Length: 376
Image (cartoon, rainbow, N blue to C red; front, top):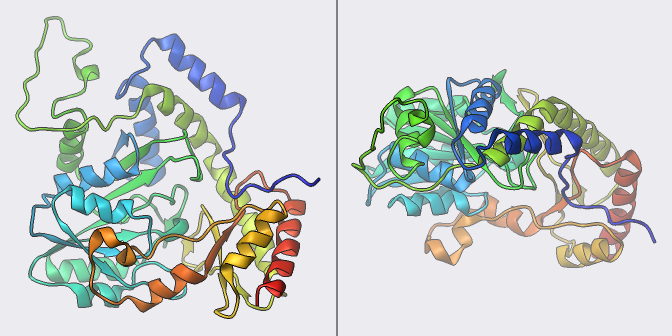
């Protein structure tokens, strides 16, 4: 029987094991230690920013971003609708209200026109999402933010290695946040990062991510016994040094992983042209798409559930794309966002990871062709 083609798969091996061994030898395994600081320094270079903070996951980075930007109860944050609900949840955690805005029908990032239409006197900021890694329209969003006195957060959960008009993902907004979950382009299993060029915001986020005090590493070389005091309630949002060691090895791999995913995306694009009822995703020329996921759009006449069943029965893993957040009952959102709502039911994620072979791509496309033909 043919092997199962995984929907997503990390690229890890001896380099990551060696990195973990070095952390073990250092004796500092817990969070916010010297390996975290090394990773932060290198990741800031990757993101094109002055500051980076390693966090427990992207959700905690988003929460920190909203906290240090001063979100309070009654504040509204405009959120790109097509995203995993952690994006909207983070606004709720900070006490604000997420106001979802519809998306572009081609690349699925938030539509700047929908953002401007959603602004009210209570709006304090914009939370844009780089959907499946492809950056949103940050020049247009910045112009809107400047006109209305708003800040911008870039949810770059899927975007390590991406860029927009020559600028790295992570540097495109006032603060950006990344995920290192197992499905992401680089991974430690879990983890995240916050990046910014604003030193005051970075310092406040670092304080809040360690319960509200400076991390222990900052006191390591003291000749007396400094006792920190707490003047605000923070969180335990630190990344362990074990995970940071893995991330250092993953950063070394990043250019090759993004390059390989781009090659695979190109193979898919060519082969999907012959399948009636399936549209390949679009990557715009002015940005680098890291292809965290590869999501096709099925024609409305195709039964997505039947396609998924056929794929899985033949050893091809798949899933829906992501969420039309405004439809989730937790938010009690009353608006109509037709583009996001429509794509929520027609998107299908097929295997995408750097370990795929050309034969795997051919097999996925062959099975998908049969699945679509039988699901009309």
